[in-house]
Length: 561
Image (tube, rainbow, N blue to C red):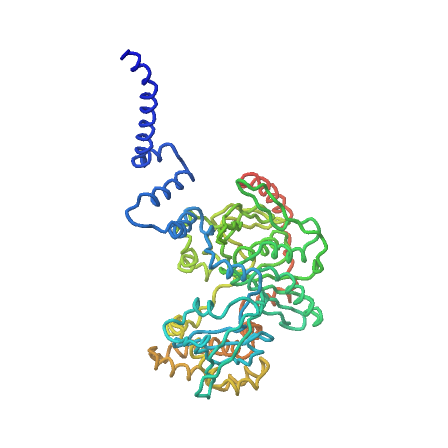
């Protein structure tokens, strides 16, 4: 009888043992499996598990979203110098740069003595419609004081930018007035031009300065060309100095205007991205016009695509200094919270097959970050012989030698002009005193200066004002001691810098470019090339051309990635 009872409860006891075993196993898995996870998981699973463990077991409460926000830039920084994370709050500003427009009040400003000073009012914008003037000071926003340490570029942008058709009340202190006057400005879309200047240098040579490549750059470029056509240009200079790049598509469309059909402009290729070639379609309207392209160490990315396409196709003469060396292609990937990453997915190659990306170890490579400084110290800005090519030799369509592995090397090298530079001049510029004085002079004399509405008349007036001596007195009062011999040596440089900034403040960016180009050695070299009719590169001697053609074929196979 007892034996039968024992047999009857045996299944129940067994089931209880199994349940208890499962509970014990779950407990130990949950609380003591940290080391185990690192063995059985890898990659993204391991990272997800780490975050889950921190959220579940860490001694204090942790904001996991904030932790991820801080970790993502660090992860991307291990890859390359140009893969980046963009937080949701910064995405709009990044998009505006490429789109060529933003929604705001329509002013350019500078911050002096913890106060916003309106430098320029954009023509046709909401600030102009509301009655704001260049020289006004913004001291309040929406009824609240906005002066002092709280005034930063980022905070000013946050308060002044905003959705289209929204209103902002600005407290304005105007020159010569003691009371603050309120203006209500209705925000609107503001276009930002990527073509900084388009004018005739002389009777034959047109000049276009492109400061970035955005969504509207190509159409702005066509408009500039149409303007120059009406003025009768027969030669063209495109200035890409200090153009950090932008959209590859814009550079390709502009390059297409100058090339005959079926010419390679650029191609891209990556580990997961098949080779994609971009060829000219032959419908460009300016295939025969003599062309010179200006570059320097600040020319990067899309600028280098354009310059490389013109150089490798022997379509233009490149003048200046070696470009930056960014040959990586980024793709934007957006997350559900509207933050995004720009991830490098490929490299781009010029028509001859060279990748102009300069060497790097990873995203934290200090030598990469300091490359321009090292170029300066090595003497590359002053001597063509100091250029260190870190890539193999390639050859253009007619056999000229070009190099990969570190930017576009110009056909004609122009050193940086340091002939009259002194430590006094460097300190005056680096300290910001020159910019500050130029703005103060503009502010104090704005009504008088507005009478001079052309570059020639304004330049003639400023030439008689003794700007350098006035600046030296101002600088001495602000901690930069007078050094008469150095001031005399750098007199022309000081006068040029001061005049250029006042021209910019009173007229516009195009007038500024036209003024500084007047004695620019790079511009002078471009004009000399045009005068000699040497804009189209010449073919090397026949025998040498035959040899390099073979060498180029070999290097193409060897260096493709």
